[in-house]
Image 1 (cartoon, rainbow, N blue to C red):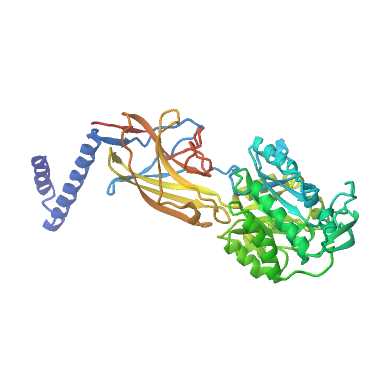
Image 2: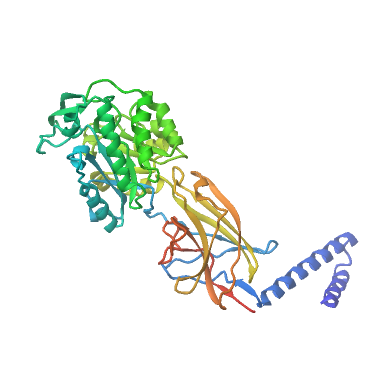
Amino acid sequence: MKNKVNLFQNYCVKKFEHLSPQIVEVMKQVFTTFSILSIAILVLSCQKKDLLDVNPFNKINHNKATVSTPSVDTINQTLSFNLQESFSLLLNPGKGFIKYYNLEEEYSNIYTTKYVRFDWSDIQPTEANYNWNWIDSQIGECKAAGKKFAFGVMCANTNRSINTPDRGKYVTPKWVFTAGAKSRTINATYWETGQTIKQVVPVWTDAIFLAKLNSFVQALGARYNGNPDIAFVDIRSYGNWGEQHLYELGGKDITSAQLKAQHLQVYKNAFPNTQLITPWGSHPYDDSYLWGVNNGIGMRSDGIFKYSTGSEVSMAHGKVPTVFEYTAGYEWLTSTGYWNPDTLLRYIEIGKPSYIQFDNLMYEANKTLYTQIANRVGYHFVIKNVKVPIQIINGQTFNLETSILNKGVTNVYQNYKLAVALLNSNGQVVQKKFLTDVNPKTWNSDVLNTHASQVLFRGIATGNYQLALGLFSNQEDVNPSINFGNTQKTANGWYVISTAINYHNYQ
């Protein structure tokens, strides 16, 4: 080879002898470098023993998507894959639309969670008896439909139906007042429906009421804390509808310290392993809400459009999830002039919610908007680029560089795990490795997160495989459970990064 290089160099000297010696010397150096690189690449491509040879042009057919042709960095000997993004609506845990009260199959591909509010008197009709079926049946229905369930239990609710046996009179159970808890009887008209109701409400600082409430919350937690089918539990034990204000109820507000000790802390004690959400009531309670945020309690705004821009719950961003609920239904919002799609998008950027209320009529009139919202609220991960070596030596670690963009408005708040796997031609996992040094909770909104990990595969039979990424809710799961915003998804939830690779396992 050296003789051939010298012969060509001598030819160049004679051919271009009219040029200056400096130019000729540069030409010789360039040619020599080019020749050596070309030969090195040729030799490396022929050394198949103990190598994983990445074939950058093979296609996958799991969902008729084709991995993009990678760019080749011959200097660093890497392949760089830019993955195709999907703009379809994704369903992922810990985020998305919340369907209130009724599961409707026709919208099941839009929402992730069902939500119900209960009156305390229905769950605990007597002090010795609990009617858990109110909650259990909802959890079972959601689980069968592949959805999570969320709920809250109220002590006052001026929208309680007058068709109940007590004509809507008792939300806090009657037996609490029979036991000596102080009360007030109010006449209220629910502003949205015009329903007039007479209701007995507690004196919020009464010791007997607080003791009975504490016992109930402890029983509630004993039954439902840590239930994997529950997305979150609302803290709704104070104020009308549990919203931590006394609108339509009157009476004296409790202090921020009382809210923290008698409600937030009580629920925190009962539900140490379940995501709690507290409604935002008023600014005087902000210090307690901040305490809650710093102790894992999320927040919600129940008055989006008329009463709130979502700014009240922005203190939770990056720490705990938040929830948006509209002031009222779509018909009311449009008839009163509050509805505006651009306004809703702006509020989402302000409050940065993980969950947002699903409204049937709003969806039917704004389907494109709903896809945009579903992917923007919470987290939304898109694999933008992955770099792998041109050749991966069997039994030795290699560098895998991932660049993932969080296109959601806030962080993910669950402990998800990123894994890389070798898949066979049917998309089945042959071997997977968790990237333990990667923490998706640090993938901030609108930030491209690039991370280099060391990966080692060994002990796999010779054959063709695909390299894929997957995001897991639990490391014990067989297959990924979190969707990326990409098109190259296999039937079992993996996203193919490279095309097929040839694995040679020589002993």
